[in-house]
Amino acid sequence: MKTDSELVLVTGGLGYIGSHTSVLLLEKGHEVLIVDDLSNSSPEVLDAIAKITGKTPFFETVDLKNQVGVTQLFDDYPNIKGILHFAASKAVGESVQKPIEYYQNNINSLLNVMAAIKTKTNLVFSSSCTVYGQADQLPIAEDCPTKRPESPYGNTKKIGEELLEDATKVHSSLNVMSLRYFNPVGAHPSALIGENPKDIPQNLVPYITQSALGKIAPLTVYGNDYPTPDGTCIRDYIHVMDLANAHILALEYLEQNKSAAHLEIVNLGTGTGHSVMEVIESFKRVSKQNFQYSIGPKREGDITAAYASIEKAKNLLKWEPQHTLDDALASAWKWEQKNHKDNQN
Ligand SMILES: NC(=O)c1ccc[n+]([C@@H]2O[C@H](COP(=O)([O-])OP(=O)(O)OC[C@H]3O[C@@H](n4cnc5c(N)ncnc54)[C@H](O)[C@@H]3O)[C@@H](O)[C@H]2O)c1
Image (cartoon, rainbow, N blue to C red; front, side, top):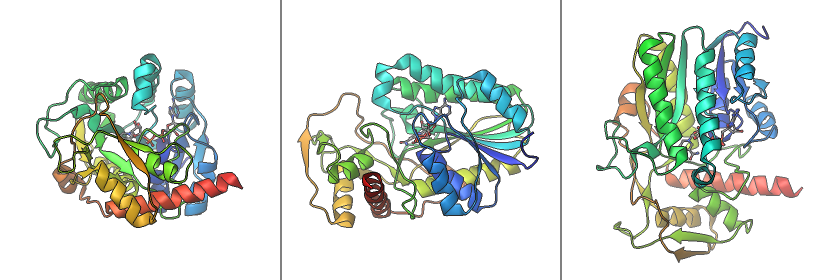
């Protein structure tokens, strides 16, 4: 046994959302065990977390696809009381090219973690609004029917929820909440951690900030003839610090409602949709950059509009987003500039 403290296990805790959530957990006084295989992150994130919080979490490099490694992890740390399961491969486009790898990683990792749980454990699963597809109603509430997601990545989230739903019915040790994120953006105010994709960003905000620095080609906006006020697609952009805070509240909720024998599903967005053009305008406003972009053809599979109903998160978790789109773009820009400067030194 490596510690007799009660721990919160954060899988994928050196990644974008996991690192921000680990910071908040440590600041709230939790003992944290981060597990990551570094497939989309780097050890420097651990140093940054320690620098922000003044605390060093436990850390293990484990590939969660490896069942032996996961079993060993739970043997070494028998006092895991809560799990935030972020670890997954998340690039939608890549998942279309590599479906087997995506199912292998996202499904096997989840199954291995579920199988290793022996004592009563609260688990929060990172799901996504992709499970709704082009929803029939806006804003999208949790009871809106799910659809077969367009990509293998999206389907791993839908299957993950189904696995958890089946398991919670019979395994009383599992107390689970699935959080369906809309579009996480922004960075920690210190600019020591933020979204740092290893490849060309697939998400709009890191694409904007990286292209503004000339690191990648100028942005192409995919289509401006959608049936929306300015013709560009609408999404619900939620600040990563708000998202991180919701995870702490989700864990506390599960702690206080130990008997739930069903999978609780909660949307996390802001409840407001913003178009691609509005995001670009927000970036120009906060960065004071003369941002260059072009309009291209529509991209296959893109849905017109998606934004959340967040009534359930407000009622159940007593949570409400605190940051605006401008806050998110300003923090993302600060992070991108600092990250770029550090990499040049
Ligand atoms: N960022 C988004 O836009 C978004 C939206 C909806 C849902 N999600 C989900 O939220 C979670 C976190 O997303 P993120 O943006 O922080 O992604 P990320 O890639 O930054 O973080 C995921 C982390 O998991 C690690 N990881 C991947 N496979 C692993 C494995 N087999 N074993 C151990 N570690 C592994 C990676 O190295 C990485 O550090 C993911 O499950 C993702 O699917 C993200």
